[in-house]
Image (cartoon, rainbow, N blue to C red; front, side, top):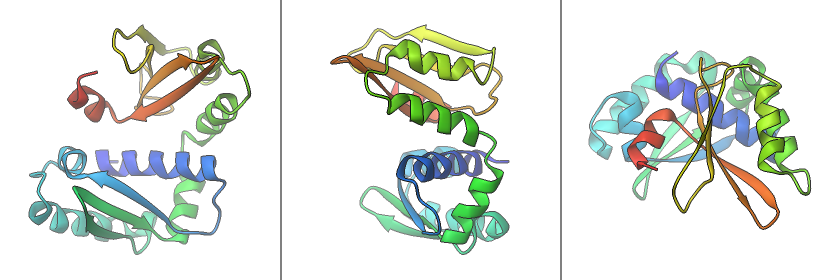
Length: 175
């Protein structure tokens, strides 16, 4: 599975679970810089459009007749309803994401509650305090199972929240 396929499948699963989507297409906006890193091409629309078209043509069996349309400083990727359903049926991280989202949506959820959700799905959880104004903790699965995303947890105003980044985007942002 290449980087874009893994990232897109993870984002589709997270959004479908958060929004309770079933039977509808899903549109996601990606910046050119992220797409360029994932596809290994220049991060300009002229290089990205043919790379995205080739990617979706090669993965039509998973994503269906997906579209990539230039949008502001990136692309809007639209996955048809049948593609969303296929991704959800094959998503290896769906159980973890469902647990994490339900935990995060629980009133009064703390960073410890979120960490417990990670630990219910792996004994290889990396937790690192982060010294910046954005987040308190960096959390990820050391072996990339059930996913290879970087989760940034912030504890504020009596509850915890998370943001999720691809490893490459996390490193590029330099948090």
